[in-house]
Structure formats: C-alpha cells, structure tokens
Amino acid sequence: MKKLIILDRDGVINYDSDHYIKTPDEWHAIPGSLLAIAKLNRAGYHVVVATNQSGVARGFYDIPMLHRIHEKLTSELASVGGVIDDIFFCPHHPDEHCGCRKPALGMFHQIQKKYKMDLSDVYFIGDSYSDMQVAERLPCKPMLVLTSKGEKTLKNNPEFLAIPHFMNLATAVDYILSQEQE
Image 1 (tube, helix red, strand yellow):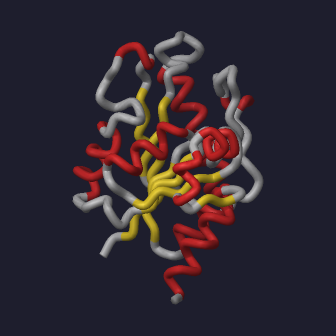
Image 2 (image 1 turned 180 degrees about the vertical axis):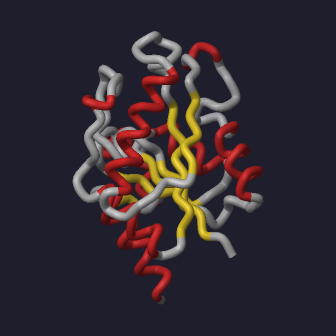
C-alpha cells in the first residue's frame, strides 16, 4: 500500500514572507525540514506539496521563475537524500475564486486522482488557517506546524487546539514515524 503525505510549502518547508518568495535566492529552507522529508522518503512515503502561489497572478513572478524556485527546493532536498514526488500549485489570485486555491479542494482532488487513493488516512501538514480548513473539508489527517503563520493560526483559532500541532516539520515527522512503530 502506498504511503502518502501532503505538505504545504511556504512556512512548512521554507521560510515564508509577507512579500512573497519571488526568486530562488529568496527561498530558504527551515532548518530540519529537508532532512525531515528525506526521513519520510526512507520510511516509504511519497511526499507531495500543495501550495498557493498567488504571487504569479499578482505579477511578482512568473511560472518559469516558480519552477526555478522549485528546482532549488528539489536540488537542496536531493543533497540530503530526499525527493518530492509532485508539486501541485495554484497560481490564481484569491479574487478569482478558483477551484484549486486552498481552502478549495481542487489540488487535493488532483492528488487523489493521480495517486488513486482515499486521503482520509493521509497527513496534510500546514501552517495556515486555509490549510486547516482543507483538512477538515476533505477529510484528511491535519497537522499544524507553528513555524511562520502557525502560531498566529493557533492563537486566533482555538478550535485548532484539537489538531496535533508541532514546533516544525521535523518534530511533526518524528511524531508520524513514531506512530508507525507502535
């Protein structure tokens, strides 16, 4: 049976910015996040990213630049022995009300179709309110990391206290892997 995990990108794998990550030079991995993905790979997980990238619609960067940013991510990840199987992204502006921008479920339906599996037993790790909304709507197994927007998300939404929350991706992954051993 395939094991799959879905990650948000900004604020989970790499530092987020209110000014958007517009170039590969602005993309910086959160310490421990790349090694955590490599651990998941070694444990047999397919790792998929689902990320809103409205900076494209806002004109801050274009699709080729987004691909270059993702090339930096995959290159740095490969250097520690990890791989991301797929990156799904929404390039639309929030005002477009598309079906793929989180908290809409379009990217997740694409993932479900491609991997031919029910997502109810799949972890989705994010840091934002919209990430947690997705997890509730699917349903899947949500996890909130407190990096980037995570602390504010938890503080402003006490209902999310029931969602497992962790300091960062590395501690979330350690928890997931420890659950498998029980």
